[in-house]
Amino acid sequence: MTTGRQDREDAAHCVVVIVNYNSSELIGELLTDISPTWCARVVIVDNSDDANEFERVQRLCALVKVDALQAPGNIGFGAGVNLGVEHALADRNIEYVWVLNPDTRVRANAPTVLINHLRAHHCDVVSPAVTTGARDEVIWFAGGSIDPRHGTVRHWRYDEPSTSLPSDPFATIFMCGAAPLFRREAWQQLHGFDESLFLYWEDAELSLRAADLGLRMEILPTARVWHAVGGTSAETGQSRAFYYYSARNRVRVMRKRSGIWAIASPVGILATAKFTLRPLRRESASPVAKSWAALRGHISGLL
Image 1 (tube, one colour):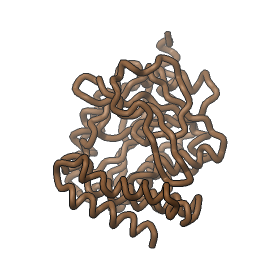
Image 2 (cartoon, helix red, strand yellow):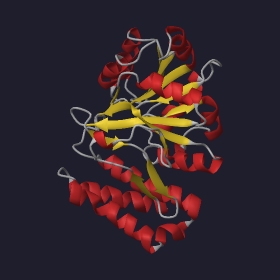
Image 3 (tube, helix red, strand yellow):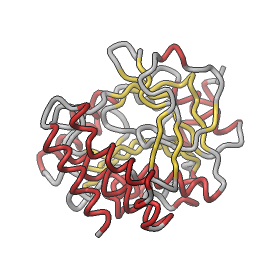
Image 4 (cartoon, helix red, strand yellow):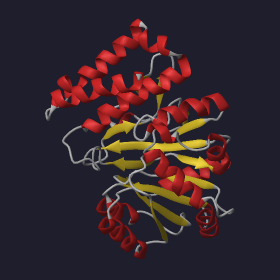
C-alpha cells in the first residue's frame, strides 16, 4: 500500500496529456477521475480550430490543475501529443507522462498501480488493460504484435471477456496510444510520435521504434481504463477517416521500414485486400464509402 506521502511524491512527477478535437464534454467527465494525489498537472491540447471549443476547454481548468494549449488548427493526434508533452517536460520534476484519449475513464487505483510499477520494475512504457462495454466486460486492448514485414497488427485477447485477463504483468510488442504511460527518458529517446502520420498508426510506428531502441513495454492487467470506442467520432462504427489514414499510414510506415516489395508481397497484398473489404463485412453504416476511403488511403500511401 502506498503512503499519503508517496502519493504526493507521485503527484509531483506525473503529468497527463490529452488531445482534444471537439471532445470537451468527454474530457470533462475524464477529469473527474484525475486526482492531485497522483497527477501534478493535466495538459490539454485543443486541435479543434474552434474558438468556442477552446473556451469550453479553458473552463475545464476549474476542475483540476489544467494547462490548456490551443494548437494552430488540427495538427493531428501525434503532433498534438508531442506539443503537450514538450510543454509538460519543461518542468524538470516531471518523470512520467500519461497519454490518455478523451473518451477514456480511469478506474480506481489504476494510476498509482501503473506509476509504482514503472518505479519498481525495469520497463520503460506501461499500459493498463483497456476495456469497453457497459460494465467493463470486454477487452479492447491488452497488448499485441506487429509484423513489420507486411504491416499487420494483431490485438491480443481482443473482444474477449475481461475476466480472461491474467493478473501478472506481461510484455507487449505493440503499445496502443489510448493510455500509455512513459518514463520521461523513454519518451525523450523516442522523440515522440511521427507527426507526418497525422492520425492512426502513430502508435504502431512508435512501437516499432521502441523495439529498435530495446525499450521494454508491458501491460499491467490489474490497472484498468475504460474506453468508449468511437466516442470521439460523429460516425457510426469506425469512421471514414479511420479507414483512410489507417490504410495510408500502414503503407507509409512499411515502405519506410521494409520497402515497397513488402507491401507488394502476397502476404502484404492479402492484408491490403482484407482491410479494404473490411467495411463491407463489419460496418452497418456507409460500408461502401468506408471501403472506398480505405482504397484511397492505400493509393495515397504508395504515392
